Amino acid sequence: MTEPAEITDPAEWAMNLSQDGWGRIIALIAAADGDIAGAEDALATALERAVTAWRAQGPPDNPEGWLYRVALNARRDVWKSAAARTATALDEETIDRIDQGGAHIDRATGRLGSYPSSIDSASADSADLAPYALPDQRLELLAACAHPDIDAAARPLLMLSAVMGMTAKQIAAAMALPAATVSARLTRAKKRVAGLGVAFGSPDRLDLESRLPDVHETIYGAFAIEWTHAAAQPRDGMIGEALYLSRLVAQLCPGDGESHGLAALIHLSAARFPARRSGDGRFVPLSCQDPNFWDQTLTEAGERHLVEVHRCGHIGRFGLEAAIQLLHMAGIRTGSTDWPMLLRLHDDLAQVAPSLGGSVSRAAVLAEVDGPETGLMALDALDADSPRLSAFQPAWVLRAHLLTRLGRTDEAATARRRALDLTTDPAERAYLSVGLT
Amino acid sequence: MRYSLIFHAPEPGVDGPAPTEEDFQEMMRLMDDFGQALTSAGVFVAWEMLAPHSETKTVTRRTGEVVIEDGPFAAAKEALAGVVVIDVPDIEAALTWAEKFPGTSYGTIEIRPAATSFVDGTWTRPGDGPARSGDCPSRPDQSS
Image (cartoon, rainbow over all chains, first blue to last red; front, side):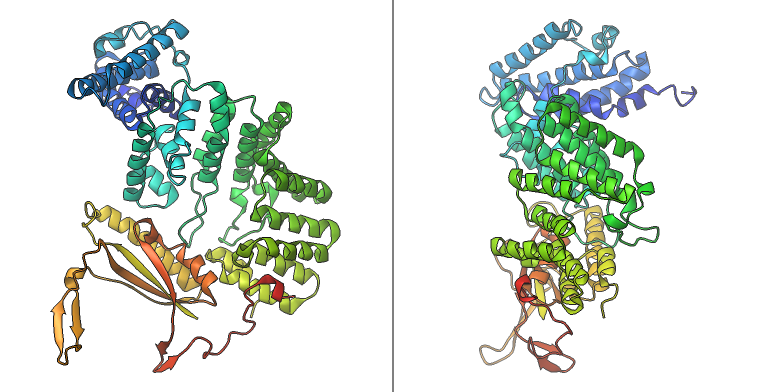
């Protein structure tokens, strides 16, 4: 291989299968019996074979179609031998179903033709396959990964693995979890999906729509990780992955307002990440951030998704949160924040998705509209509803801020110390400690 | 107020394969982060991770004379694996830290207030010590 670097080594071609390609192929193969681990094994086998076959014969015109068919064949071999060994585990019916699934693809695209009986024939007749010939069942795969029967903590792991092809080790590094823990959770979750006993290949549209909130929640959870470990350095986590998944759902459900709302929220939040720490690692609160450090491309993408929310005519929790973010950002950029509008959005949010964090934010906005006294009263009123408030750090930060504005310095210091007691992040602690004796 | 974060976990290798060297290093990095955060927050008192049961001796004089034995070899799968002692104002703050303990991904942690502690050559009880200036009320509504 002495060709220039851009002329891809076929082996590298196989290794660099795009995230899109990985998810599409896994979705199609796992759709038959819900066995994600089996589909991943089959795709791994296909990738291995691709290295040899493509080196010998050159890469096919449609690598994804080739990989899909070889992986499907590998999977069918497993089904058949499993059926031969035990009539109960995987019966002829399952194999028929996948065969029909294949036939369906065949009819839908008119391109895949008959299954190759060997790798050679796969590469031989793959010339007329285009990547878009593979039907997209990733929405079904996403819904399976976010299934209510799967451990909530395992759902994002499953998505990253099945839809994006990340290894347990990569996921572990992104989430600051031990790799062994991630592997164990993934194995358990994949067994659980397979054990659901449902092929997720053909749920009806309505069923899929009813499961979208779980999909959204999982993607948002992957983005807004509540870090389970204290660390000296801020972690970026899985911003890129969450951006990808949120765009994917919005692309698969272009008419769903909340899918765009989620994409808008994640893009707008991610846009501000570079500005949340100063050059020397100090914590910078939103109101003090320099908009020049916000990522312009991500901001614009977020704004576009918000326009789509509007077009869809349905705004939910994520759409509202995205709109709140955008208003805050516009306020900081222009130097004048539309607080009354923010209050209305917070009121709507409290209706759709009440939460302690939302209520505390609302009290902060109320203080800007009607004064710190009113904000403080709103904060006090929360206490009656929530015993968790005394352990909720943001409530103490806000309390300290409002008391300072009212000139009640001693009480403000007390509240700030309390916030400090409940803060584990060193940069945030340093920020809160300023001026405390 | 001192709290002990008492960590129980499976003995290495008892519940499945023992962690690899790589797993071990990874967990050590996370544990180190936790220790650094405790230290920078000024709440750190002490932290011991314990050797396995096989290296344990017990001493008793219950029968009147000194008996030193190997063990205990408890039948339970999970064993005492470590103790972190921190000094924070109350149980809510202690829980905030306990939630961040990396070992919770493979074991459980128990949070217990100290009844009395032997510090600098003398017994101290919670409340005995010099109260920190501006000690906080436990509920927000007492602050106004």
